[in-house]
Image 1: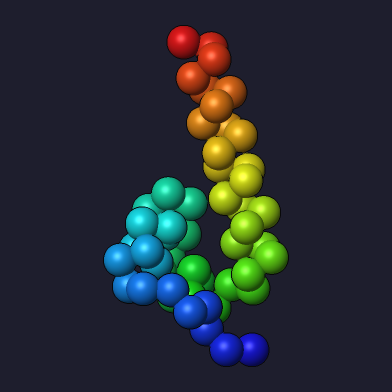
Image 2: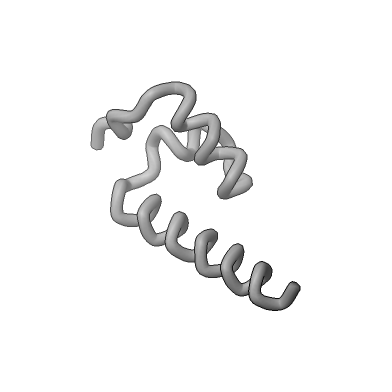
Length: 51
């Protein structure tokens, strides 16, 4: 499997958002990355609605 075709800046932002190491972001399968982003967005929306 080849690394994701994303910029270094994007990878750093994703690593910070998902709280995972940068190396793991670069070698994560795309479908798993999309699922994790959806989970993070859902959690953020849930947090905002509580406030």
